[in-house]
Image 1 (cartoon, rainbow, N blue to C red):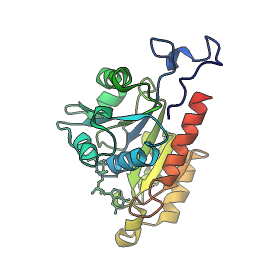
Image 2: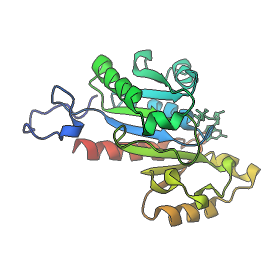
Image 3: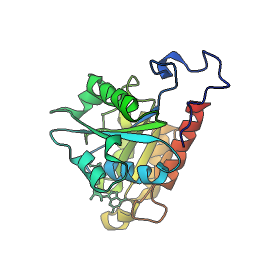
Length: 227
Ligand SMILES: Nc1nc2c(ncn2[C@@H]2O[C@H](COP(=O)(O)OP(=O)(O)OP(=O)(O)O)[C@@H](O)[C@H]2O)c(=O)[nH]1
């Protein structure tokens, strides 16, 4: 199914200028996933594709420093047909490609829409970076910041733009908390103090629930986008 391109009831200005493709139809919602190296960004993208691919038309852009490893993982896992997965090689500074010089990523999302579109959703995964990496609002409409319990349970307390301002904070690998001595209640309280009303999801991709809560959040964003 594809959402958001049936404009039979829409007036000519129903789609805002920044949400339009050149032909006037609504472009895909773009959601960025950022966070430290190894926190589970690719695993979350893979699980989201599996959860949403039967109900939405979606595609993925991955950013790796010198390789196409994340894209190759998604291709190997066959989470989407290959033409729906594009890799951007960022060189030394992955945060530059999602925040400052976003041209390669913009070209990738536009090419995907031209070649396999129309699309409802494009997930843009950043290369693993530090806690300060956030996406330009010129590239994505909403962003998810993925941290994990094994990276230290003081990360929410330390803050940083990803933890503090991302539209959704995901604390991943909760299954590892007992083994690494992470205090999930403290992480939740610290995240709440940094983020006020912004949402936080605790997840384990090793559990049965997996990516369910994040998928529900993505559906909410899409509903708002196509409203
Ligand atoms: N135990 C456990 N392992 C997980 C979970 N999610 C991801 N992993 C594992 O953590 C490792 C890193 O996950 P990735 O998804 O590659 O992490 P990433 O953030 O994309 O890593 P980079 O792209 O290198 O920054 C992999 O071995 C995953 O299988 C989880 O919820 N629990």
